[in-house]
Length: 242
Ligand SMILES: NC(=O)c1ccc[n+]([C@@H]2O[C@H](COP(=O)([O-])OP(=O)(O)OC[C@H]3O[C@@H](n4cnc5c(N)ncnc54)[C@H](OP(=O)(O)O)[C@@H]3O)[C@@H](O)[C@H]2O)c1
Image (cartoon, rainbow, N blue to C red; front, side, top):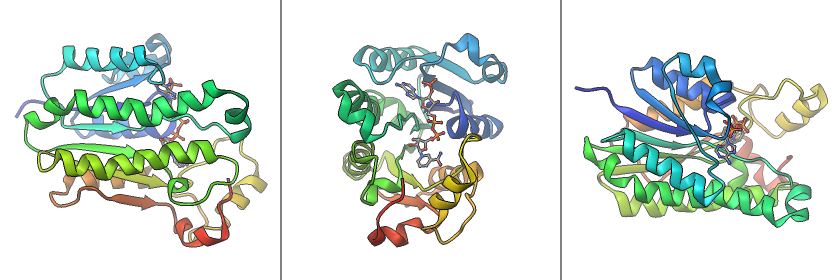
């Protein structure tokens, strides 16, 4: 069988990068789309991961990405929507552009890409679409109402696309809690963020990869959400710390 291709958005850093590397190590041809100049992602490109430079919070960037994928690929094994903008309400309420960018990246880009790339995903057996959302999409958000609302829309699209695209394509989401902290996060912040969780240590990116690979292996799971949130959702009623 020829090498299968996975498109994952936002693999320039952190979790997306880890997932792209795991997919590549698993034998897939991996393409990512992100804003960073590919020349600055030399180490990633050297591993063989292909980079499309596209700002998926713009109509032009979404079109560029779709056009490039249609040019480069005859089929897709999976499409993983990982790219994300984490803006606070302070930023979003001060500028409609910030809110628009999150709506385009978390809603418009997956919506258009799922539709425009559907045929590629159906071409070689069952394809997968995976939306990486956030546990906040299921909780009430404290300082990230706009961000959480756009991720909740993505959760909703998971179910609708699963119904529309099945059985040729499975469509699922993964709602992470804290997976890993940034180096700059203080000890106080880390403790406060993990306080509502059952498991007090962030699980690290392997937990996300386990969820992605489970969904890709499954031949019966579609239209659902895997909560990789260390049990954080259990304290939903007490409000979200974010
Ligand atoms: N880290 C966690 O603990 C955690 C918790 C809950 C949910 N999540 C979710 O998990 C996913 C990965 O999280 P992360 O922490 O690794 O995110 P991150 O560090 O903020 O990285 C986001 C990625 O998205 C890309 N991106 C941002 N804006 C873009 C745009 N307009 N067009 C194209 N690409 C864009 C970035 O690349 P460029 O800058 O090169 O564009 C980057 O590769 C996200 O969907 C996030 O919401 C993560």
